[in-house]
Image 1 (cartoon, rainbow, N blue to C red):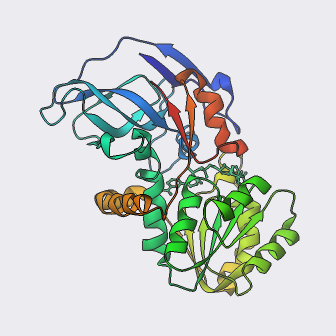
Image 2 (image 1 turned 180 degrees about the horizontal axis):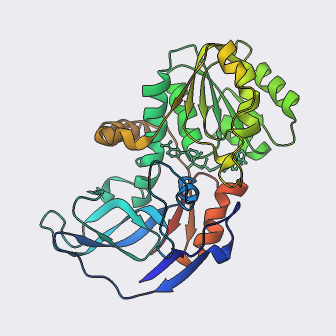
Amino acid sequence: NRRFLLMRRPEGTPEEIDFALQSSEIPAPPPGGIVVRNRFASLDPAQRGWMDDAESYMPPIPLGDPVRATTVGVVHASDNPDFAVGQWVMGLNALEDYSVASPGGFTMPIDADAVASPSNYLSALGAVGLTAYFGLLEVAQPQAGETLLVSGAAGAVGSAVGQIGKIKGCRVVGIAGGPEKCRRLIDDYGFDAAIDYKGKDHEALVEAIAEAAPDGANMVFENVGGPVMEAEVFNLAHHARIVLCGLISEYNAPEKVGLRNLWQVLARRATIHGFLIADYAERFAEGGAQMAQWLAEGKLRMDEDVQKGLENAYPAFMRLFTGANTGKLVLKIA
Ligand code: NDP
C-alpha cells in the first residue's frame, strides 16, 4: 500500500521534500467499515490549505499522514453489508493505494457504468462541478441579461461556472492566464469575452475588464483573489454579488495580504459571500442530476487533466499553481 505522506508543513510553495512516498501493509476493514482500492484521486487547490497548521473549516493534515484527498475506487474488503466488495465508491480518503473508510465517514456508492470514466465523479459530477452549480445558482442567483465575471475561468470550477452562466442567459466574461486558455474560454466553453491577466498591470487589467463588461459586473465568481480581484472590484455594478469561492493566488504566499481596494466594495454596495461546497452536501444528488443532464445534452463540457501514478503526486499537484493543468486535475492511482 503506497502512501503519499505529508512530512513537513510547506513554507510558501510546496517542495518535493515536504512529502514522502512510503509503503505499508494493506489495511483490514475496521468493524462496520470498508477498505477502498483507490483508482483516481482529486488534486485540489484546497489540499494546499489543509497542509498548513492554520484555523480553517477542516483540521490540518497531521504530519506523517497521507495527503487527504477525495478519491473514487472499488471496495476491496468490507465489514459493512451496505458496501459489497467490487462496488464503486467515492469518499474523502487520501493519496494512497488503499484507504480505510470507517462507518460514519463520507463514503457513497457511485454508478461507474453511467459515465465515460469514474473520474467524472471527481470533476463534473463531484465537488468541483457542484461548487460551480451551487455557488453560482444558489449564492449569485444569476438573472438573464446580467454580466457574470469569472476568475480562474479556464480551470475546473471556473469553466463550469461560465457555462452555467451562459445556460442562464448571462453575458459571461472570463479571466485566465495566457492566450491559449483565453481561446479555450471562447471556443470550448462559450464565454462572451476572455481576458488574459498575465503581463497586465493593475490599470491595464481594470481597463480590459471595463471593455469586456461596459455596464459593470453584476456577479463575480472569485477563484483567485490578489491582483486579479483588486482589478475586478473597480468594475462592479452597483449591488454586485461576489461569490468568494477561492483565493488560489494566496495559497502559497507566506503572508496573506487580503484584498486592497475594499473601499470599492462599499462604494458600489456590493456583497461578498463566502462559499463552501460542504454546506450543500445534502443536495449533491439534485445538483449531480442536473449537471449529468447538461453533460448529456451537450450544454456543458468538463475537461479533465489526468496525471498518472502516485509517484508523480508532487509534480502533478504543482500543476495547479503553475497553471499547467488543462481542466480538472485528477491523479490516476491504478
Ligand atoms: P483549477 O482547475 O482552476 O486550477 C487552478 C488554476 O488557478 C490554475 O490552472 C491557474 O490558472 C490558476 N492560478 C494558479 N495560481 C494563480 C495565481 N497566482 N493567480 C491567478 N491564477 C492562478 O482549480 P479548481 O477549479 O479546482 O479550483 C479553483 C478555485 O476554486 C480554487 O481557488 C479552489 O480553492 C476553489 N474551490 C473552492 C471550493 C469551495 O467550496 N469554496 C470547492 C472547490 C474549489 P491560470 O493559468 O488561469 O492562472
